[in-house]
Image 1 (cartoon, helix red, strand yellow):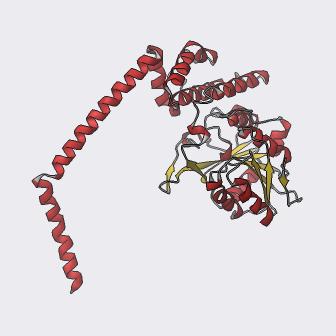
Image 2 (spheres, rainbow, N blue to C red):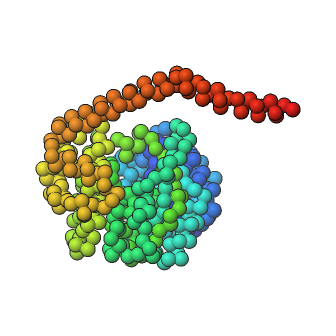
Image 3 (cartoon, rainbow, N blue to C red):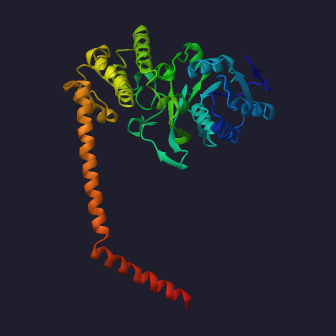
Length: 382
């Protein structure tokens, strides 16, 4: 294992970043950390055997800035194992787990650290927004931090907060964690190709004595088709293994009954989300039928009521009700029919729009709009 280390000082924050073949994005990621308003941190870039030049860029940062470190691993394809390696090496009192294709607001470290210290918390959660690299546009996200579930007073205890598993998405890069919370509870990321973070994040939240929150966007989450989240057909059951691990640990710690409704909504939302994100019919049908035949019952969701369902899962509940009525093939047929009807309505609307554009009334309207513009132009010449 190759390591470039230039800093023996104990920093306040350790930033852990797994990377693999992200040459196109890694410099923007690291530069956004280099430009943070808070400077007492170390960055551990744990690289999974990149072969596209990513490692060279990280090494350049490690040579030029003692806060950056390059750690090389043999390729495993599991970001969870890379994050665990970072935890072992971390010197900071607080940990941030960020992704190598994202970039961050300059105040990320300063604001999250100030908040976690002021509230003497174990976890500080903050917001993120979507970034579309092909257009350079940003879009607000309503799921990274669900505002309707923010507590009235903070901090809150994880196990007594009714929405402990539901306020965020389970991704690690929207939270700052106190390292002692991780060490004392021996928390690790799961060795999964996808969904490796669901167990870690949710167990950290439920075990935290004090959780605080910042309703502030501090992360720019890049949307790209080649990310792990966009390609779940190869490992369609990782989310299921993660949910089982959470449930089993909650029962082992005698916490399940305390957080049952929150966990059920987590399991429900994750199950339906992963089903609907599949793009291959065979995998979709396999998961659909198994959800109906055994997994819903396994997570005590076979008779999940609308009253138990939190509002953010409302659209998924409609899918759930359809699933209870028909097979996977019938469901897909219904969806195809609805799509055809929607396309037909869209075509009709397009034709009506074209008629309107060519109508005499519209042309007259354009002429009327043109007159004051022309007068304004002429007045400007005087």
